[in-house]
Length: 301
Image 1 (cartoon, rainbow, N blue to C red):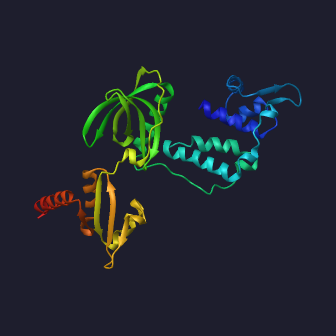
Image 2 (tube, rainbow, N blue to C red):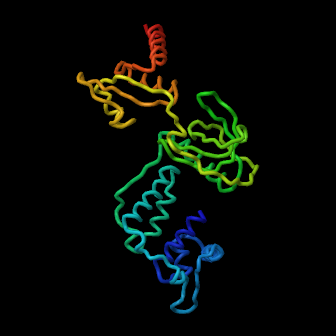
Image 3 (cartoon, rainbow, N blue to C red):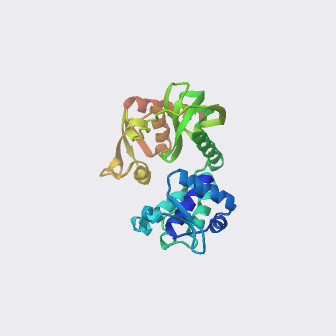
């Protein structure tokens, strides 16, 4: 991609006194004409790049504008590279890994070293998720509308949005943008989107507020839950809610307290524990689980 290549050129120029266009063309596997166009674009963007002819000439950044490389330590740069590598796990490509290999070959020691942190953002839905992410990124870059079918607990609906942000949080991917149907900003989970396509229709980008991603805003706690879990459930409670979510009783059972967002999701979650949990509160949810148990007994008896 053009932007990746231009970032690579800047990185090389920050690490070297001067380089030639043929050198950059060979390193980045493009033509010299492409390199010249990239240099021209960087100059237009305000980067003070100079070219000198002759034996000791080449392409360089004006010395007074160079960033002191000590501003980024080896550890800090490795953290940045770990983040870039994680993008490959999402896209199912080696695009960013290849870019980093090109940057690190023959460069300063701040770009090399064995990575101590590996981040994999892929999921079980990688085959269907990666194309959605690429399509949404393209729509955001080009300012074109997206159309899809969306499936939620309230039912399914056709949506058309102006996409502004791709978000990875709560172990899932979301897109946030202006929903033309709801006339407001909404967040959509990518795994619930089907028949996604980018329309020819473009839109004029709005002054977009940054989405409020606080847990309280997205998942407001409305249901106060109290339950008794068997000892064998401790690992799940710690993994999903933390060790402060329960108190171990004298008989070994775990008295669990939390606030939950949605009743249906709460019931589904409790049922995954089978007979290893007894819900104490709220009473109305306890009664619903009892009804479900009676129906299950009828089905399986």
